[in-house]
Length: 387
Image (cartoon, rainbow, N blue to C red; front, side, top):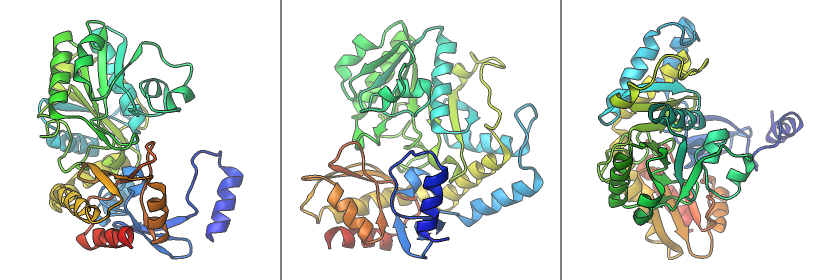
């Protein structure tokens, strides 16, 4: 099929959702993808932060294929060897005291269930989230989203969602109180233009949640699974060493297979009883094979260190462009702020066959590349940016 025939068929039979690039991607390997006409593109967007170990990593493909031959699916009504292995592996790379995993199908589901756990554990209803944060498109998650038009798309919203100003430590005491069930925060606000807060802010946030008995949730749908150069933002130096009560993960967790997870502290897990949570497809065998294989690849190939190297290289090449005002973010979640707007640079890179992403801040272009991008590929990005 040609790009035009694929485009025509999608438009005829698929409900309109995203504004799409004029590309029909039919295969990929590592950080590269190919169109229906066999044009090759460098993918520094990773399918929106999903392809953490690159496209179709052979070890992940092999693990999925072998699992598919053994057993494609059985629900959580039975125990599973691959689910047990994936849960153990995921918990092993999470910071203490996070020690129990709940698997679902997506980031928005993970955030929905994290907020439910907070309400179940505290008996309260109020959820605090932050200005310009994005947590998903399902009912509770979109109600916790205070970014542009998104929250309005979810109207009527779930009640008792309260907005706090991201990064304002002074406002925490007034907003987080004894009626707060949970506080959910993107530690780096990706869609908002890669906005960051100080380590001291996370320290104060942890302290205020402890003072009020509120559950602290880090939405690491994008920052998790190695993307920021550590397994999770939780417990890292940029977080001031703070570990929340729940971390949510998705995106690159399954290397393209839909999967999400809540990783929960042992103390909080004790408050959850059988049938409090449930999912048919969450924890399915193919997803679990992908999760375990993905984490194995990151460990074996040293991709946490490589993500940190990628950040250094991107900052270096951007320093040579006078139009670059700043580079924000960590590891493979970076926002490049341009004087006068990012759109011309986004188009320039796309013309050079390099895929990047925009954000809700028109001045910020986002890079969400695979963790195994090589130095030469970042050099190609730099050459196109400067050319």
